[in-house]
Structures are given as structure tokens and as C-alpha cells.
Image (cartoon, rainbow, N blue to C red):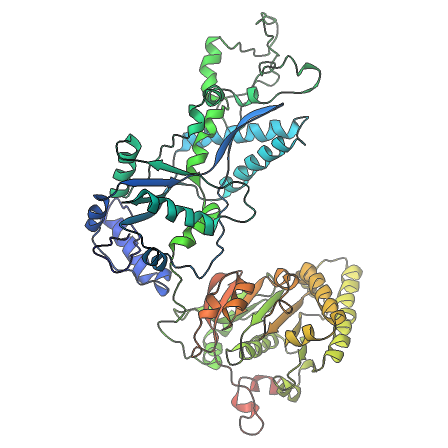
Length: 620
């Protein structure tokens, strides 16, 4: 909301319509004391100021889903396209933009309300099921229009069956019509994916329109406008199509296609309907001939009383109309980010616990599969699983905590079983040499030439050997081999620094990426884990092949460009220099900031092994 005469800057408000004091207390508690409070500082405020803004409104515009009525030889139908929002400019600040662009009084509103109309939902689900079934069997299903329709309906089937569903309003209310249009046009320009086939339209409401007053009142009362009068339904074709059964919109094709007006067979009732469907309905002829009195088949003529009773329950085109006013988080995530300020990247309570303290407090969490990444900003341990995600991408500038984190992972990997094998390509040549002083199965190479040999050894001695053992014992993963009594465990392959590989011949890089892809597909079964680490995450180092295969990413402080390349946002580029060990995690547990503890590394006689966590292995 921006009142030019009152506000120096636009302000962002989160308005929540609650129905009891108990609900209000819960909401306030979640916002001020819950997980979201780590990133945003919410302040309770009186929204009466909103009334002042509303009094100056002269223009309202709204973004809705695009839709069309299609008419092709074998199908006449209604297509409401899903939103395809995608964030493309992570440096964009809505507050700064509204201020600098010279807008006058303006409210930009994004409202969601849980959709709880069970009967309506039953109807459109049945209509979708019927459409997908019939179009899938249509003889002209390879026709571009039929394929497109089938794709849209299947998308609704998939997304709307698994995600929470909401009624939505995306509106701009302002003094000037050019302002309301410009801000929504900017929203669509920044959030519509390049691959989107349809651009959502912008509706216009002016003073004097009934819909103008309806939207104005809904904004004032923190409500969602449920109705949507799409112009397509006002056309002659739209009015005719609206009342048609789904069956009547799809021609059967074949020898009877010229006679098929949709009445040649009884329309299918969805299996989810509460009505019973006849097992073998008869074909009712166009002249409504009398059915065989000895037949057990049910025949419904269009003008019969029974048909009129059943008619509303049969899938109709009009049952699809609510889809244009419904959405899910998956569809509108780009819009959400447009409205949301970037989270704070600085922990409000800097964590100073050492690796030894965290290990002593939480070592019960460390298992053959589980390790501790670090602590979240509330001091809770954040874990990850070798079993769920075989490979990790670790990036960070010098001094950001990347190498410290690698040591922390290696320690936990070996703590479970010191006999586990670790292969390290350390092109810096000094970061992991202390491991040679310990009785561990660690092999270290420090040149690209030796790395090529190491890659071959891992493939032959680990991958192929494990494959042979699984074939011999008739099992399909390492865990089952262990249960068969085979002395075998996970193997860790550490690549640090990956940029040195990119600087070498393409043959070495291709060889590593080839095996990385192979291990990514089968790493869970074979127990071969990879840490792909770099302080120079350029396009040559972090290829799409790498990002695709490394499903977990731990990114310490990097440049904005590098953060964008790895995470598709610049959040890791905003980590301050004075926060070593702070990283952005994108993995199986979600996306969040983590704080990796400082792990003391042995340094000659100055810091002996006995003074570090690594002393654990001396006794082993």
C-alpha cells in the first residue's frame, strides 16, 4: 500500500482475516515467535489507514487465468489455463519500484482463501476425469488442439489432486488507471515463464460498475471475490457450450461420426459420484425408440423425468467454470515472490558453538546414513541423509567455511565406521594432508593427472566390485549386502577444487561428469557418495550436469552471479563476510540458512591431533 501524501515509502502488509480471538492469538504467535520470525520482523498495526486509501480509488484491475473456447473437428470445449508464474529477477524490490516509478495512491493486493466448496469440487473433478478419459480414446488425439486440451486437463488432474486449493484475487487499486495497469503489467512481465504459452489477461473495473464496488468492498473487508464473469461465457458459443454434457463436446469419430451429436451413448458418470452407473447402458436412438421391456439395461431419454433428475450430476462443461478462479501454490509461486521482500541473511543470534560442542550434544543423531549439517538460527541441529541424497554440491569463496564443512562431513562419515574408504582430489595439496597421519583408509591425490587415475580406480574397485557382489548375492543395494554378512560400507569421493578440473582437458572433466551421472542414478544402491566442491562456481565448473546430479546444495558466501547459477536466486550472495560457516541449504530437509560449526584442524606441533576432534581416530 502506498499513500503518496502520507508515506515516504510503500509498506507491505500481511492481512489475515480471523474468526476468533483464539485464532488471532495463534496467528500472532506464529508470526512473531515461529520459524518465519527468523527472516521477517512483523509489527502489529491498525488497518484503518486502509480505509483512507480506499476512499481515493478510481481504478481497479485484476489478473485472472487465461481461458479460451476451442472448436476443432472432434472437440468443442473450454480450456482454463493454469498460471505459469516463474520468478526471473531476484534483485527486484517491489517497495523500491513503486516509490521510484512515480506511482500515486496505490494498493497492490494478492489474496488467497482456502477453497472448501466440496460439492463444486466433486463436479469439476468428475468433469476432468470424463474429459481425460474420452480425449485419451479420441481417434484424433494426435491433433494439436486435442493434445493441448488433454495436456491442460491432465495438469489440473495432477496438481489439484495433491495440493491445497485456493480462491485467489490479484488486484491493483489506485487513483489512476495507467498506474493500476502498469503495476500488473510489471508483475506479469517479471513472473511469467518464458515457456508460457498464454499470458494471463488483465480485467478492468471502473466506478459505476457493480463489480467495481464488489472488489472495493472485498479489499476493505479482507475478503476474496469469489465470482468471475469471464467474457467468453457471454458469447453465443459460450452460452451454448456452458450447458453441454462433456460427452456432447467430443465426437466419436469412425463410421458413425457424421451422425454423432453426442446422444449415441449414455454419458459416463464419474466413479466418485454417489450415483450408481448402469453396467451396460443401451444406445438410445435419435428417435427415442422404446427400449426392450425384457432388457435390464437402463435407457435415459433426454426428455424423461429420470434423465432430468440425473442430468445435474452428469459431467457438464459448466462444472469446469470454477477452475478459472482457483489456484495452487505451485501455480502462483512467482507471484508470491513478487510480493515478498528478501529474507534477512544475518542470524539474529550468531551461533558460536564449536564442532566439538555440537558433536558432544548431538552425536546420537549421527548414524551410518545420517549426519549433522549444522544448526539452524534457533540452535536446532539440521541433518541430512546419505541414503536419500547420494551427492552434494558445496560452494563458497575462500574464508567462507567451505573447507571447514568438508572436514566436518568427513569426520562424521568416518566416525560411524573408521574402516570406510574416502577418496580425496585435493588440488590445493594441503587442506587434507593431516588425514595421512591417522589410521584411516583415506587416499589423497593432488594433481589432475592423478585424479584421472583415481576416477578409474573408484569405478573399478568400488563401483564394479559392488555390482559384482550384488549379482553374486542376488540383492540390489549395499544395505542388503551388509545383512548378508559382506564386509562393505559406503565410500566417499571428495572433489576439491572442481575448478582445477575444468581448467584441465575436457577428457578429464567429461570422465568425471560421466561417472557422476552414473553414480547419481545408482548411488543410493551402490553406496558411493560424492562431494563436488568449488570456490569458483563458474559456468564451466557448475555445469547443468553437475547441478542436476547433486540434489543437495550447501552454498556459503559466493558472488550474486554464482548464487543465481546454483540456487536460481542471489540469497547466498548476500551472506556477509563476517559470517564464516553460514550457508544456504537447499536439500531434502528444505531451504534454509544453516550455521556450520568451526572444526579445529590439526596443524603440526601447534595444534596436535590430541587437541582436536580427530583424536577420536588415534585410539581406533
